[in-house]
Length: 332
Image (cartoon, rainbow, N blue to C red; front, side, top):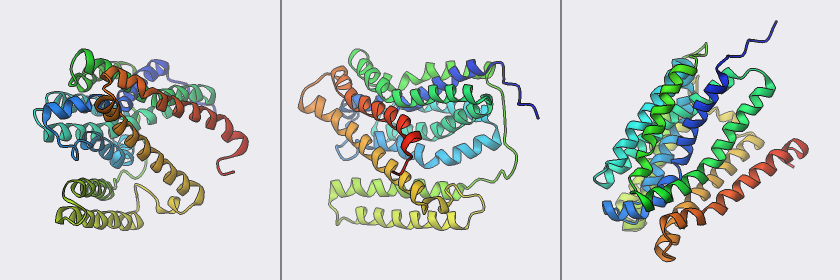
């Protein structure tokens, strides 16, 4: 059987997908630099300010697997376009936010639409690039965007906050989304997967709501104390929802996360390690932003540049890991 003919517009499609991926990744850090200004302008409390970051990451991470499954069976191009348009609308809502709740809601919507956009783009790359050598190049570009996007976000956030306004850290996504959608309609082909099209919506809702309740519990504990009714109640709801998620995944015929993967030492350990590293990096960027600007008195641009060594270390470590893993294996 002959190999499938590569799509003639695949390299143009790669540019479109990389552009959208850059937007999704840089939004995890671009708002960090603007956070002190946004907090002062919208009168956000110290305990609540972390929701500007966590509302995005929780929605994105909690719904990412569901977004990938939706893209496979609803249509990868369609999901990509809807995700990009929704991301633009959510960014506009955040850029025009008049209070903290409006900003938090916009960031959550960004995460939801990002959870559609990112896996759809990744799936499109898999379909478009069928030749191993070309696929490796395409995924290298995708990985470089994912790794470098945080650095771009730090610098761009500093420039926009210092020389324009903190709102442009959100509004800048609108022209990027419009360009990505326009090019996607021309260069990206539609594709779908065959098979079971059922979605594990209860599992996605349970895990996302459980994580939100857990973070809210920590927020209330920071404001009212660990013994407050709101904190204890939120922790209790979080435990119930996360236990329900495990029960749903154990019984589901199409689970978001097959539990058998988590008990495998290699994969389970990798998932746990990735979770801890991600949590550490997000927390570090959040507190570094306030340390640089509030304690040391740096300008937003100086704070963004001062944060770059963290991203540089991540990129260097990722490059070394990609070279060492084929030689020594993942678990030695």
